[in-house]
Length: 83
Image 1 (spheres, one colour):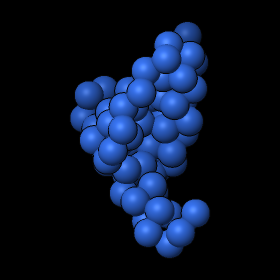
Image 2: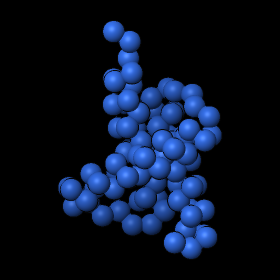
Image 3: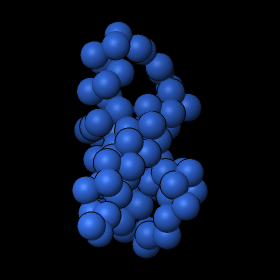
Image 4: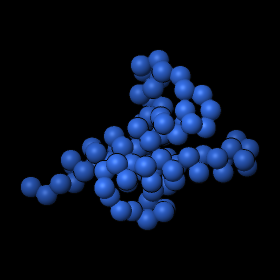
């Protein structure tokens, strides 16, 4: 992966984590948003490949990563919820 690819992946990760934070009304630091976005991109890419969905370009990657990040935070919220 080239230097620009790593930078673009970091930007998409931060944006996806930020979108997930907004949708689920959470407040995390920039680093945590990056981690949420990166994990979400893996989850989103896995789900998109399973349902044979192909979204190309920056916007497509952002959508897939954001959906994955939202699902990740939602499941994490269910697991970490106090009894």
